[in-house]
Length: 154
Image (tube, rainbow, N blue to C red):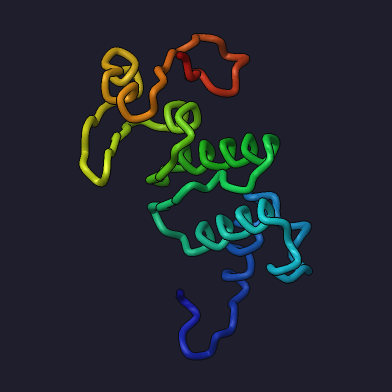
């Protein structure tokens, strides 16, 4: 968004793009066209494009779509890294364990209406809306070896 009329990348622009590509593990794909990439590789490439804009906030809609388990894990690590770097991340997601594990705040919507807002542990202690919407519950497991500290329960 900063190229101006010349549409020419500066040395600094190229460095920013390279760093974004490395952060999302698509630097090895840089010589391929987007339509040659798998859907998971495209997701990471799109994330690199967003990171390269330098925005303080990222709005991501179902970023784990099309990703295999390893790629989902890498995505979570990338998002955690961005979060630690001070980026604000708004994540629209139906993956409850990922959402609970990644989020400082959650907003539960039903048909566009806000039903519940709070930290993940608040939702664990007040599950009536989660159960009504998703027909499952959530549980927190304090085990640092787990990828997700929150799991779906019946």
